[in-house]
Image 1: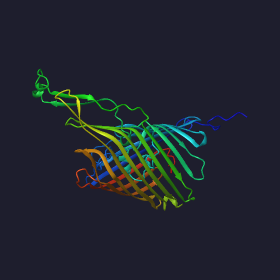
Image 2: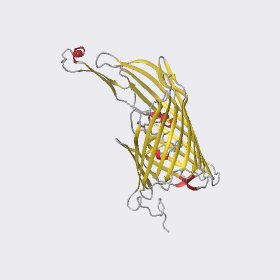
Image 3: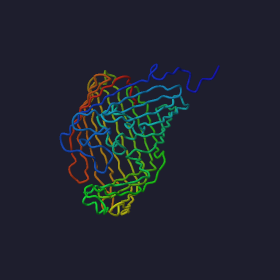
Length: 440
């Protein structure tokens, strides 16, 4: 008897017969901030602001929004690899959300994933918007990591041991480009240009033509070093005890270390600020699901929560451009301190009737909120921001969904003013093509 090939003996085709499986999900949202003015929570950067422009970071303008169209391709490449590609399209951009290959039949419960993907830390981070139980991403995932959560290029190794209960362990080596935890600038140039009226040009050049605008320029090298990737390493563990047929639960632990955290900010006043150091995070997550066994989800219950803590150990340096023109950077301030911030959310979704669900969510961001922002001769600390949400979801079929949601925000602000606000969102999603089962 001849030995079996490494990939097994079964026949494999790329996708369905000749083509990969293709799915399209259209996500539209009507947004209205009907009371107050909710901006970013104090002490956090990298998220988006409702009502102040739109980008692919799932930000929403007041009124109707085509948030994104997800175009997904999946196929078995051969006996050894599966492939998945998801493109996100909005009205202005096309972005590769994920593009990776996974091994099919490694021994001992091992699997390798390589490419660009959403990290498996926590619970919601690896989910796309159509998987969420609420219209928007939890604050802790958005503001501790970024608009897309922790999304990176790299490689992941997971291990599922043969145990009487579900368990999965993983480690990820990632390039390190996520703004909230692994921002990287590297070496380069910083420059600033000011346009002056022509009659002032003689201050820069005695031969300047007063009929033409004068440009005042400053340039210098940035103070950052290049740090080669991978710059971010993460690890996670997930456990699922056997609770019988009707009940299921999963508990998770996550950790990550970024050996480079670099950020800069150039002000119009010619003040240039830099942060240079490293960062780490840790988190816990838990999910419980009850299957009532009734038609179309009636009586089903899902409870879900996550907590993450982030610490950035970075040196702060302030520079100013010297001279009238082509001046160099001169350091004017140096401080060193750890930025410590965290956040959590708890949510529940209950099937009140066939195809109808009610959801409630409570969030807190910045229970610890010692920020790297500098005030006078020290670093700033801010209060805690809160947000509460309630929604109603109707699913006529597995291919369409209508959801109404109300958010109540109580955000801490940097100037101490009222950060309260109410907003309403009406979401409609439709799916075309192959739509696989969701993971736990």
